[in-house]
Length: 96
Image (cartoon, rainbow, N blue to C red; front, side):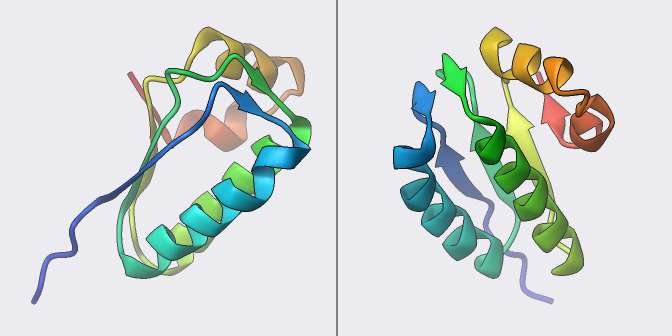
């Protein structure tokens, strides 16, 4: 069995509607190839749609039987997740 290399996607400081398309495209490409690590330490502001996009990406990765992790989530990202009551959806993918 061939081991798949883990792909990394770095989130920008501001994840608003203007940034979503580029991030989504990067996530789609990465999820189709194997396990994905999303680096989130630079996030200063995140839209609700971006959080739902990350949940969707994690679900797609799970269906493809690939790991999906969010490494070093910033305080702004974790605060947005908590404010929207999405802790349960993100609990299994957060690291660091």
